Length: 59
Figure 1 (cartoon, rainbow, N blue to C red):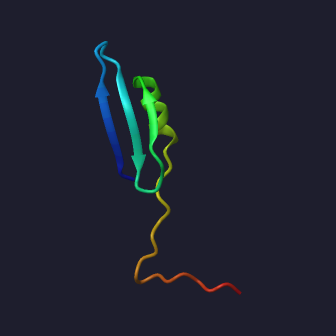
Figure 2: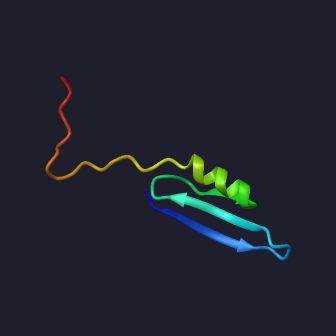
């Protein structure tokens, strides 16, 4: 899973920003503990079908 972070350090030293994966929306956070919670809750993108493994047809 690849996570993209947009970080800003405020004047008081606090981190603020957003975290996002390829598959999901951006998750805003304010503070280091919130950032860790956001990272724990992120879900990986569903696996992509490979060219040698085609999806099964429903029966």
